[in-house]
Length: 333
Image (cartoon, rainbow, N blue to C red):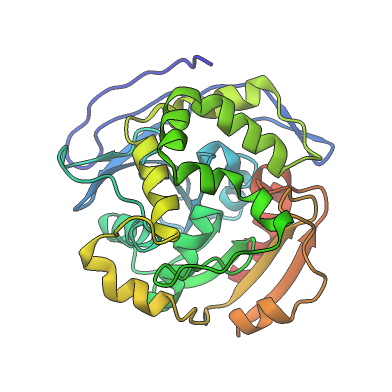
């Protein structure tokens, strides 16, 4: 699982770089060459030192790509090149608890409620001086983009929502779901126990690889593919961040006081008004998406398109990067 790295300190907000290399992988029947030797930049916000990769025209309109749990920035490798070729500035940050991203205060509680992940996105954009940007995300990253589009619609020009609307009610505990749904969420119930915390600490790579395989059952991940992302999960805050996220969403852990009003607003599940395209993976381990678009149309009143993407599981950007890049270009043309 080892990966060659080269780190060096820089001044001001950019404080490091990391070399990442790997072999090719198969995407939708085509061979996609991962971007090699990507320099990881660092930028400082009030709470985090955020690691991110940047590509393209520095003067181009910015697009921010947001990964989810339990993945990292490598999920976007196939999405970036077409956006760069079209003249855009592409920014791919590591979420809190992943890769080189670190909390600035060693004593700060490692919390990761949905409002915090969204605020990280806003803080990241502010630190880079971005008044407006487009966003695409999946899983946690999609949730951050959804919430940012709700709270700051003037900042988000367009959104590609992989998986649809992803805002949670963290105020009222959810009702029990049918057995097949509850079974798919086993990891969440596991993380809400102390055994689950200990298990994630001791067996994180085993758990993550199992989730990758079961959430995308039609996709075969190679060891080389996993090895490129594995170091991100050795972040010292990874376990605390994951555990807090899944406990908070089930009302089993308190959130940050500064987000109480935000979480109350989000509990009302407000619509997302910015222009959006919803992409849903046809081969998701959470079940094939419904062909009925009405739910997404209600949540996204300015919905431009809703597509069920064949050949994609939960990690949709890695499986069908063409679907994501094409959707972003369609929204921004």
